Length: 412
Image (cartoon, rainbow, N blue to C red):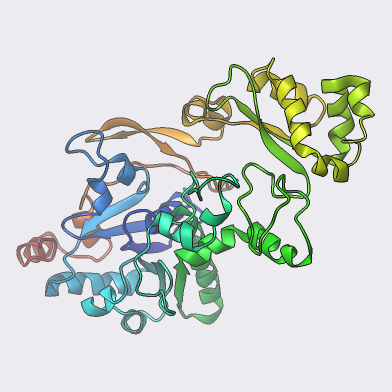
């Protein structure tokens, strides 16, 4: 079946999470993703294994819809094969440390010389220029330096990393946007270009609301924050909504770690909420009859709602509030989501079969295209498609592949 990215071939040299997130999404949308691994393989194949001698879930959940080949890029024959792949691919992706590709002989100017139409996409921690360019970056380092940690957590507590991998996977999504834009521009110009996403930059972009608040502080306090003491930077806001409307997580019965409902109180729904939880007395209470007053007394307001919620589960309270059009949502654990009918209907948690680990689940594709449904295929074994790619894509005969293997093109 024709897919959105059918005919686009990706030469994917990325490893761990940021790059593989990007290439997996491209594979979901129909690109032919050829994952180039060293003979040792992507490091995540062996990290956090739950089944001995099987590819870890860390690897399998980031590398579906790809073909794996091994190449030794320190070997002349391995370089020769890689050069031929560059000539026939649309995109080459990498997330090596600074200078690694240069030392291997495949800097951007060389890659562009080999194939002027190719798009080269790079993930870097801090970019290729600037005082931080040579620093190593990991997920939590990017969150720390991109502004996320300083704005996440409770006001009187330590900075916290997010559960979402905004540094790695967030950068991968940004990189996909850059690749698709470069491919569109190539249709007009005939030329490829270099695309770079720095993890620090992408975290900053995902924290844009906090940058909004940073500048608002120059003109006075942030009235929607529960705590009204401010310095000259955006503070941690706990579960405050961060928008023009008040929001918070309200604890429900029986009081477990995820027995909460997140509730957003819009101006137009306050009267209905007040009447439902407190009757005429609350409806006429001057502390809460306008959003300005509610902001000033929001801790008292949330306590009233928490008292009301103590008689209901999060699902029961969601039903009550949905009946009066209050935006709200239960705090769902990974177990909740793994068994959720809505998630299953959306094909966001999909069972697959793996030759080494057996049945397992992968997250589905969050991008839904009406004319390009996604078929999710298991992650490849190390080097599983080396012979296939060399014969079908590059036209090597079986004896030529055998000779390359003998020469060390696929081994250390």
